[in-house]
Length: 571
Image (cartoon, rainbow, N blue to C red; front, top):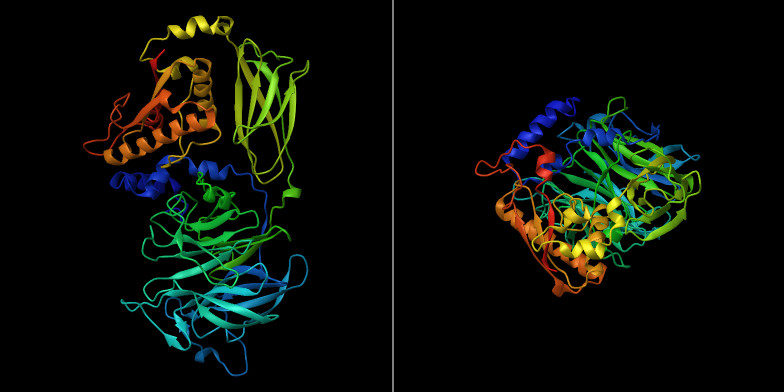
């Protein structure tokens, strides 16, 4: 339906799909971001893409760079003195010649010409595609059918799978010593490699046992001699019951991959998890970002590749208007030095709209560490220069006013953002808090006293989300520090969606994360905190799903149940 641009009908059936199976990650992701299309369309991407001259009427895809060459897969007919069209073996699924690897020579900054097939030591009479090179360009990994040393093998059902092969460079563009990596199998596929900039990790796609969906993204350690460690599934933060494939890791450790299981424009879309390698190593949240148009379309878009050093990027797509089934497109890749970000704004009185001179405006990073703090002048104006593709919080404060803050994430393109911080005069701040606060009754939820918003978590995750959740928890930490004899019971709740057992477990994990954050980040004695997860057992409204496992409540009504409570148990 998305391929036919019928998004309304697609959304209707995705909702029914989720109602039929509340545990499926694709349905859960859709329900968590039902406004996905508006968010994708809102991406202000001025990038222009170009169909490469080397494309043919056959399939061309999967570009990667090697020295001054572009290496890609193509089913074009080889032209030589001994073969004719009628003698070429053809792939039964599309009646095209089998894929081979080709190179194209770089002519200038944006053009590639002179297409040449790889030597027969790499190309066989079956499929070859998807290459990646180690940083020293001495080792190449590539995908091939299960065909090695003239032996062709099928799995138990008679299907020939894909395997990952390794070749070593003997001299410029001369490869030898081809080997099959040790975790290949006749019974499943391993394909589409990508080596990181340090040459220490290799990412790839596979449907090996333990895979969540049709294919998942995996990672393995890469040793200096080219041997590999054991494959590790990247988990459900990346993988769904659909197809995740064609991974690429760039110089900054950003992970790009194609998926048809996450909310997108249609077919395979390209997604990115920024700073993936650092976040994965530190067990942090891994939000996937749809790249939007023009990289993605309502058709299949995949095989993303970029070189930030040369500012070149490539991806593959079968969108209308191309030369063949799949075509390779180029674009100018983002480079940090090309991006300028700044935020300007003014501090105003929320009620009167008048400016508030000499207020304090603070710029925080995603971990709420202070980047810069200023005192505005008589015009109440402020200005900050920012980094690209980064999360910030801008907070305005002044004595006798409640604070106001805005959370922003800068894009990869130039931005000048205008903000207005609205401070409300708070008469309660004139009272002595030592008189009013100790009079709170035992059993009171202090979130209502402190004005704490819902502590949100990323979809289906138990990590404390930065920066919004951390800001709210800092208020709890400040309260506990201010009154060193109080004790708090932390109670975590979910909405009714998913099974009761699942929600019990999820709320318990979120409760543990919340308490750990207060103890570790706030330096609070753990003995002053108790807590547990209540799952969906204490809903604040009529949004129950059992026994039919359905609910007619809106997202906003469900949100009221996704809450954390901080109950005063000792003054």
